[in-house]
Every structure is written in C-alpha cells, then in structure tokens.
Length: 190
Image (tube, rainbow, N blue to C red; front, side, top):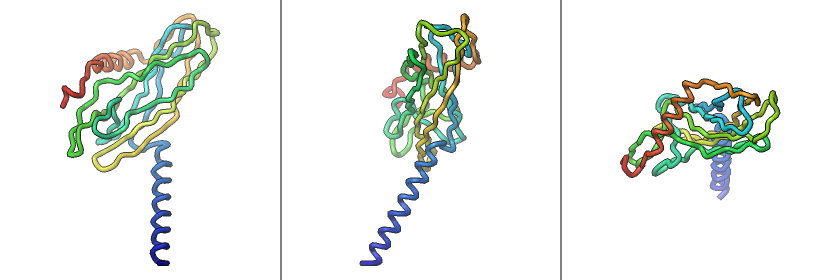
C-alpha cells in the first residue's frame, strides 16, 4: 500500500513537472518564430493599414490553417490597440494538405504570414506614435510531437499627413497569397 502511494505521488510529481515544462516552453515555442509587421510606418487618420503575423518555421515543422482539419489548432490573436483603433479578422493564405494515418490536416510549413486590417480613428494627432500589440497562440508540430506556442508581439506606427509604406513588395506578395487562398475548399482538396 505504501509503495503504491509513493509510486502514485512520484508519477503525479513527474506529470506536474512535465506539464510545467511544456507550458513554460509555450512562451517561446522553439520551432516557430512569429513577428508582427505593419504595412506602413506612418499612417493617416481613418485610413486602414495591414499588419502581418509572419511565422518563420524550422524545417519539418508546421502550424495550422483556420480550419486545421482532423486535428490541430488554428493560430489565434488577441489584439491590444490604441483607443479608437479596430482590427479585422485574421486572413489566411491557402494551406498545404497534409495526409497522415491520423487524418487530413491543413498546414503551413517554412513561412507564412497571416494578415489583419487595422483601422485607425478618424482623428489622430500628427507625430504621435501608436502601439499595436498582438498576443498570439498557435500549435506547432512535426511528425512526432506538437507544442503549444504563445508570444506577445508588437509594432509601432506614427500618425502623419501621408502614409509611408513598409516593405511594400513583401506585403504585396502576402496580399496576393491571401487573395489566392480565399477560394480554398478543404472538401475539394482531399
């Protein structure tokens, strides 16, 4: 009886430590590195701009589409915006289809940018800096294991009389990928 209690207590302690390790690792999951980028460094009052959550992934690792398929978890974001700013829904490019013995999943490997439109209020003070923050959660997987990830990201923009683009070629590519993915139908991909 004593041996069983000791064994149960040891098993519970190891489980708790393992859960803490996995949860602690979720702060900065080691195989996906997201960053938040704005399409403009200077914004104009009332004129929308785009932000990208740009994931860079290690080889053989993936994150999930908005409908992950038979398993997985889509990336999610909780925005912290200045007063009067609003954020649209995340927009996703078409995923890759990953078929395994466990089912079909819709994933991104290597690199992916998820986009959202941010609309500032109709009045901003020219020259003021505004911070856009995103608390992002995702699930990153390879063929053997999945790890939850979460990270707080941020970027800043300055109010101006004229918009100033930031990395326009990159944002044009990302917008084109999202537009091309709008018609993706998981039922037709299987």
